[in-house]
Image (cartoon, rainbow, N blue to C red):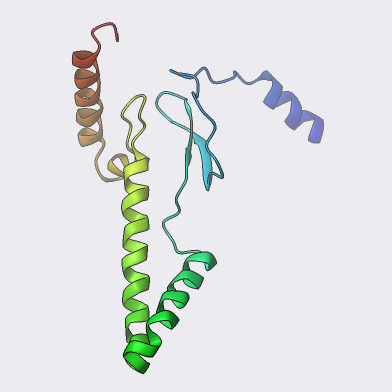
Length: 133
């Protein structure tokens, strides 16, 4: 079974990306290939808070404890919500492929809008550099 699996993998075509990856991401949270242009991509942010983030929020809460007293623990949840919102905004900015314009979040919502956005991306890219075909 294992040899059969290795044969299938070796016989598969290697994806040829639209553009080779110009740099290696440092500590990516997720690595994948763009489904449209097959360029290797990665995310540096996650949409959920990690243990490190909760530690940071706790530290900020404890720093303000002498000033506000026990009222500051009510703000712990507000700090966590704001930090998660910021992480989601950063992740949303990373979703669109910088090489082909494919956005998986729009693809899940509406394929027609995704096609239109990709077309606009290529038109804008062609205006900036007429050599792009």
